[in-house]
Image 1 (tube, rainbow, N blue to C red):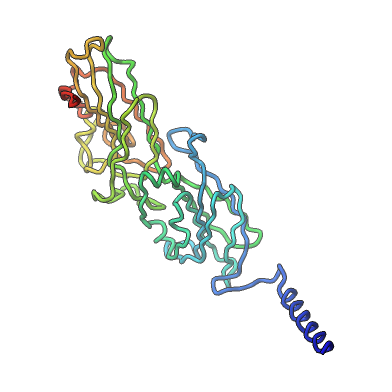
Image 2 (image 1 turned 90 degrees about the vertical axis):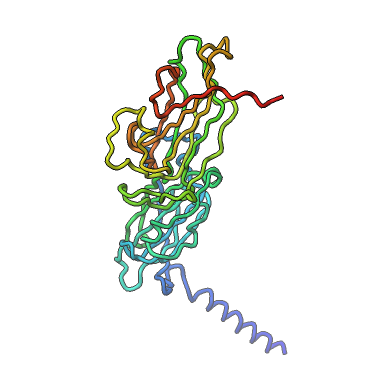
Length: 341
């Protein structure tokens, strides 16, 4: 019995040795998708157009990342594999697939950051990925941070070193109130500040600039939470792209006429409600409730497009309300009576 036990132990040991030595690190294991290869990817974030990047706000932070490999470079190229990373470093190693039969075939690597895992298991074509629309609410932006995308075309070898530049797909809107031009003794008391008609969807790549995006549908837009207390200083929002363009057949040269020439009812705007006092020392004399509606865009006269990776600065310069009856950005009424007891 002892000899038999020794024999079977030798057989087991020999089998284990065969299993552990039959495949070394240098052996290539092919699958139907290709040969696994580890590739070094280096990430960088494109500069913000129209404004400085603010590190304190996290404009360049990557909290989650999907890396998707496509077998080819055109929009019909199918997805080969998708990899997901939480809090990735700017340099990371990604397991990809070298094409079978043609190791020199160019592959597209697509990078999507801060999308909350939406693309971690993507399957489809490159064209379908670029235009895949997904929900992106105010809460999502706060939780996921700033959506970014980028791509790189490369061959897949063990020595491949890829650099990808990520571009923000959200726009930055900065708002402040300048009261230095108020008439002597007058005062403005802001009551309500809100960003309205904000897209609640996004996609990795917006359509061509001549096409409005998102489509004109009330289901795809929302008003964001207002500020109602101590409205002063500077306010910053990051929102999905809203490409509304210009109203066809119009030419507007004066900012006060901009609001009368919207291309549609889905342009993003800033809404400010305030009390205006001609004489701050006697607030019951001639006081008015004023309403400002301000549309960011490529200019302050006739363009309503808000693009990703661009900063839009809106400064409301308050100079009183007298003589501004023809300004489409401002309206005024008597202050409603208080409903308090």
